[in-house]
Image (cartoon, rainbow, N blue to C red; front, side, top):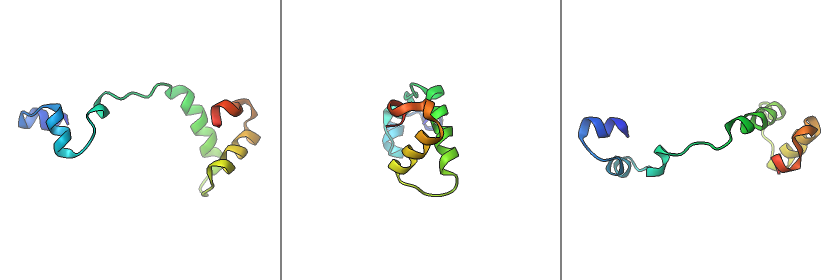
Length: 74
């Protein structure tokens, strides 16, 4: 978006409309990336390279990492 705004003198809204994305995407920030990193690592560790359903992944993570608890995963 910045490239379009700088080189073609158009507003952020016009650039987003041209590209077809949301204007809020520029301002979005994750709220708890540190907390999410722990859970993401645990999920990746359990999944490996296989494909599993959501409920199966939750059960496997809870079994391997009981400290994460129900509220974090479910």
